[in-house]
Every structure is written in C-alpha cells, then in structure tokens.
Image (tube, rainbow, N blue to C red; front, side):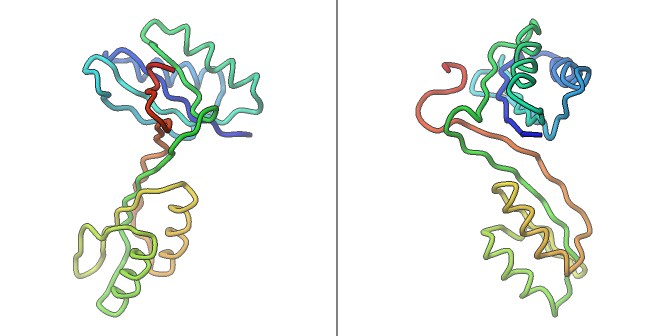
Length: 166
C-alpha cells in the first residue's frame, strides 16, 4: 500500500466532511488521516486526506469519485508536486524531578516545546514529519507516555502557486 496526501477544497457547509470521508470509506479505501479547516477564503474549507491505495489506478478512482461530489471545488494530489508535510503531536509523559532534565534534553534535540508541567508529568508539543514524531515517541517511551494526541498529516505545496490555482 502506498500513501498519498490529497488537498481537497470544498464548500464550507455542514456535512461536507462527512460526505467526503463516507465516500472514501464506502469504496473500501483506507483513510490514514484526515483534517479539515478554514482557508484564506471564508466560504472554502480545505480537507487534507492521507489515503492508502494499492496503485495509481486506485488513487485515480478516489480522485474521480471525490470530484463527483457537488461540494468539491478542487482536488490536488500533493504527492505529485513539491510539498511540505507536517504533523502536530501533543505528548503527556510521566516526569519526576529526577527525570525532567533528561526529558527536556530529548525535547530540545527534537526542537519541541514543553507546554505544561505538573509534579507528575509534562506535556510536550512537537511538529514535524511522521518519522520525527515516531522517533521522539520511541525516545520518550522509557519515561512512560501517558497520552498522545496527533493531528495526522497536513500539507502545502511549495512555491507561490496555491492549490486553488493548480
């Protein structure tokens, strides 16, 4: 299975995200991650979808089916253009006075931030590639990760041309 990130611009209406995700899942394609948010235009929502498909034919089928939805404005496969892909993670890690400096050193190496500290734990914020986030999780596992919240992949194409003009 190969993963692709699709940028899908849709009308900003209730239920559109449900229609998009439902269409993909009904066709038995796996959604690895999905995120939606406002764009620079108030009436347009951008949905970033990371899908797993067997081959380009299946990817074309996903894009074709999405394109048939009335609220879909534009679909761009960001794997076909030079793109920046990032995830956000919040990690709650068990921490005591004795381990706090070791945790802080790991967070600094990964260019993350400690955003909350309590006597029993710390909350760490980090953005980066999936492999970077997986690596910090692996490093912090020895301190006991209490909770993880990840956004999934979001992406923008590089250069001056926005997705709506591609």
